[in-house]
Length: 121
Image 1 (spheres, rainbow, N blue to C red):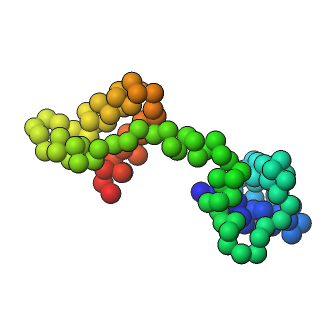
Image 2 (cartoon, one colour; image 1 turned 135 degrees about the vertical axis):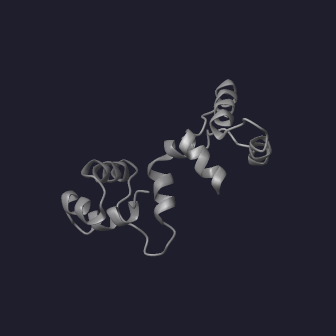
């Protein structure tokens, strides 16, 4: 996750983007993009309270990411668990079926790795 608040705090304090990059651990391109988007949105300072936290700032600065996250196809984990108990059924096979169904519905399927991680949880 990009720490937008920390990046913008340092930027508004007059710290250079290279220094912000090295102190936050984000690439210079990421720092530059956060700063540019903040300028385009007319953000000139941060509130001292916690209303402008990282998640709020990310949704404000990168609204298209929110739309992409909401575009993932829902997985019925109970069904996956029941199917896995059958003979010769694997997570790979179930992911393939899930991805096919998601694409048919015009949604974005989770990657296999994410599918497995979420099933594990």
